[in-house]
Length: 312
Image (cartoon, rainbow, N blue to C red; front, side, top):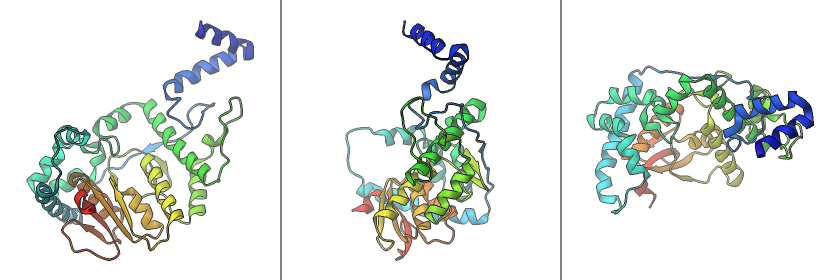
């Protein structure tokens, strides 16, 4: 009866055209209504995804040698520092299911093989929970609908950030009020956000195998924007000379944006296998910044990537 009542109400309100429009929108966004922050009365906003694939060079192999050395030391020291536990957590499952290929490469001590893997890691199993991983890559690659949905979802976060900066007005949740923020040109929003923050927000082109909303010479994904937001809030809260510590830093994307905001003392604490991925990302994303890995000499102004027990 509920569906029948809705059909009758739609016909009474606006006739068959309104009914067909509501059916169309339900088919487009029915199970996404709690996923998007903005309603999309005209359907998904225009947006194209782009992806890059990278080929390693000798500089990448040298970086992989550094990462391997840090991982070997962390693997050895973890036996001393790791807490004893009588349970299995999500990271144990990740290690057994999603990190198995990467761990085999790390234990092979082959820097070129590691560089080949990490250069396009976003289409590999190891980035499950970080950027989607192999299964998500295949799903998006094979479906035009999912590519449109992915682009719309990234645009949704971009618009939310523009609202947070008061670049576009916050849209009321009251129904039947015209919603238009989601359809504002993406490149225009990026330019306005950059002007407001005083930094560039497009990340370096270093993430191989990751779908991004195409903008300017590269693009943005969800975590770029979430991490930009976090770095902005840090910059609003403390002065640039305050050292920052982040527990569970993922790929270190907050550190990339914190560097753009002028923070020069940043430490990330995470699992050794996550430190591998973060080290690769940050060494490539910030070639002119001091990146210190576990076991390397400390520097006063640097981004340090350390195993979790170093937090103590």
